[in-house]
Amino acid sequence: MRSQAVGADALAGSVTRATGETVGAYAIGQGSLNNANYAISFVDGQLQITPRAISITADTLSKIYGNLDPTLSYRVTGGNLVGSDTLNGGLDRAAGENVGNYAVGQGSLSNGNYAISFVDGQLQILPRGNAVSADLLGKVYGNADPILTWRITQGELVGGDTLQGALSRQSGENVGNYAIGQGSLANGNYAIGFVDGQLQIAPRPVTVTANNLAKIYGDLDPSLTWAITAGNLVGSDSLSGGLSRSGGENVGRYLIGQGSLANGNYTISFVDGGLSISPRPISIAANGLRKVYGDADPFLSWSVTGGLLIGNDTLNGSLTRQAGENAGGFAIGQGSLGNGNYTIDFAGAQLQITPASLTVRADDLTGYWGLLPAYSSSIVGLRRGDRAADVLSGSPSYSTDANGPFPGEYRITPSGYGLLSGNYTLNYENGLLRLLPSEPRVAGQPEGAYRAAFASLDLPSLNTQGKGRKGEDDGAAGTCHSAEDEGCASADGQSVDRASVRVIDGGMRLPVGLSSD
Image (cartoon, rainbow, N blue to C red; front, side, top):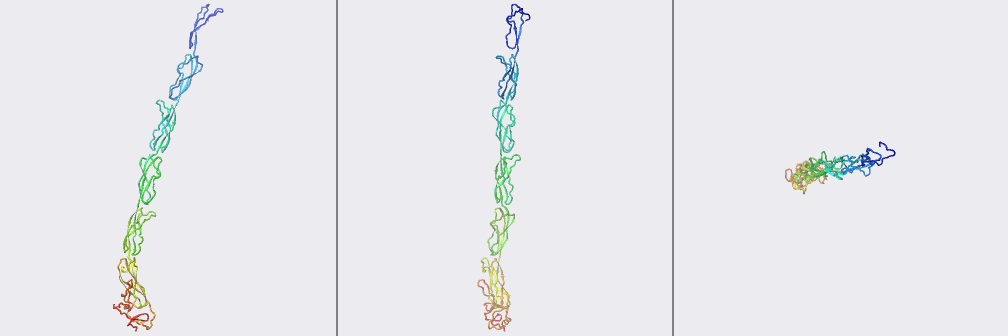
């Protein structure tokens, strides 16, 4: 009011304003304000409605990767909305769908009547949980690893998502089980619950065949060798251990088996071989032997002349010889001599049967000149039941070196036989003639008769060898000793008649007609 009312005058009524409650300027007019006593010149005023200050805070929210966004919400954290006022529009968030934190901003959220102080919120996108299991895999030792694969056993991948990276496995190439782990397999949008798998390395199949081998009996075994006949060893692998063979050293075939030959990375299919032990060659020569006709055979012996017998080996059996017992040569053959572990190259020999010595031995005689019995002999050395009559021809005769009735020892020399058999050699053995010096005196004989008779004797005619009486069984013949012997021959071959003799001093018998005078 620029002028003053008079006294206690006042203006009646009131001013009015333009209607409206939203933020803005509203004219204030005279309205009903008046007083009749005054001419009012009214100048409009203004009501300024300013925005109401409030604080809005976006809620912190979360979702699982791949899910839809939750509704972006907020709270009035300072001031208040009047009446049923609301905020128009909506919040927004930073773009992105991968796991992470995204700011929630005011977006279009507003109301013209409010001055909004906005506090950003956050949308947290959390990893999507999945269970991934590695597959159970296998390979054969020495082969390349298969691709390590996996399966989602719980949850799912969103859209065309994949997992990056690769599985890994526990190191090792020998036969066994190796864990398959997650390795680098991942996707940042997923929380992977991983279940290990397993790679099983199985033994590599190979076929091993023992080589067939041979040796000579008594030699050392050759190295037992083998060859891979199916499959293969990997890289520089080898088989450890060694083959074995069935026991035995005699000639024959012996099984060669797998023994300790092995490698844990291989399954071995083994084919047996054989070790053939062949006979050892040796040369055996029969020893040349001799025996005398009628003797037992000597042991038929032999010698190793080539090669050798092993250790304490011997040859079994025995040699044989050609049948026959007469003097001569008989072949000695191998007979049953042998040993299954040897091949014998045999050289024969001979058993030489030599004639036996057959001896005609003159029997010894002891007596007095003129009183001796007939000469006889013994045949010594007959063998194998032979009889003298079958072996000898002829008949015996004898001679002595006694040249008179002189006491002493003289030879009796036999002869006269021939041989009918080649199994003997004929030998003669002298007998012994002992002439005694005297005999008991005989009554009626004169002294000195012996000396007289000796001086007048024709001694050679009394000592001549001739045929006498035959012996009983051995064909021995007698010799003239006196004129009493029938058929005795004189020195001139004439028969001497039986005559009476008388005993002379010294034991000499003289034929009748001889006188010591």
